[in-house]
Amino acid sequence: MKQFLILFGFLLINQFSNAQNKLVFNTLDSLFKYAENHSISIKTGEQEVLLAKWQKISAQAGLVNFRMQTSFSLTDNVKLPVTYFPAEAFGGEPGTFKEVRTGQKYMGNFNFAPQIDIINPVSWTKLKSAKINTQLTDVTNLIVKKSLFESISASYYNIISLIEQIEITQKNLYTADTLQIIMQNKYSEGIVRQQDLNDATINKIALKDNLTQLEISLNQQYYALKILCDIPENTAVSLTENTVYNQPFDPNLQTDNQLEHKSSLLKADLAKEELRANRLAQYPTISIVAYDGWQQNSKNQFLDPDTNWINSQYIGLRLSMPFPDINGFTLTKSAKINKEISELDAEHTKLQNDITNITLNLDYEKAYSQFKTANQIFLLKDENYQMALNQFNESILSSDKLLTAFDDMLVSQLSYSAALANLLYTKSKIEINNLIK
Image (cartoon, rainbow, N blue to C red):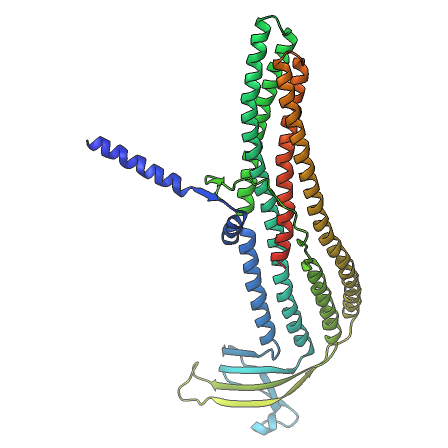
């Protein structure tokens, strides 16, 4: 009884562990939600947004550029400097000098010198650049997220299509097996040739191999999906969305996503601010400066309690003017060229962005047309196969034409399934572009 309970507990824990290591998604949106919470790409983007915000805060603090230089020192003048005084002041001969060591052996200093910029043009430019960079980071993360979701959508519908194609192939493999048995019986009766039986066997073998290839492709797509969504390798993934072939065309499904153009405009703004910063770097900076310090001198020891600390202070304005040099000149010229390049790139990106949107809309129309055509072809090929099967059973049609009709029907059915997946993918791309913009 004890061994039974141990075994039962082990099985229960094993089942619970398996349940914990399996993810089931019944819609594409549920997969998107998982990716938002677990994708390393999205998490990295969130950290970049946080970094950009702190850079903006740093730029705001840099407007006044408050600095506080503080120092504390203890100096032991092991050998005091020598000063020459007229010897007659000490009762010596006129025209001669006496060596006298001056100063204090022990010196203590404590001071601080605050400085605040009240006019610093470069700092103003840095703040504006930080604000633009924050906006650019947000737009870049949206572009990364959109691209990620499009890749996830492609993998998702590939998996849905492969699952459907595997089911279709399995059903038709049963039909191919039945045709082989029929050929075998007719061959035994001397009705068909050995070549006809071989063709039926080859057809079955080829279909088995096609099924194996589809199953391998399905596993590859699952691994690709795990990489995109950062799903652990040992976690099983299952997509359970039902395939719906009744797909009406939506003429109102359009997109006008301008994320790429927004990104190029913000990059152009950054280039403008860089040029402005290089120019303003040649302007003076005016700062309020102050000083407050204490000094103690002693012949006896450091921090002598019998000696007072002497305080000194000052306050004033400081004008700092950079000296013009060739390096600053070349930096300004380079920044000007970069600004012009970024403006041209923004103009080109606008055109490219608009064409991309038009292409997405055309891809949807094209995919729907291919889907409807694939449906019509499949219905006709299936009808041809059914008629060929009836004619073969009545000994009107040869076996090779029956197998040809069967292969044509299967290929058209698989193409119909692939066309559906392509239609759903192109539709989801437009929806993603309308959602993330």
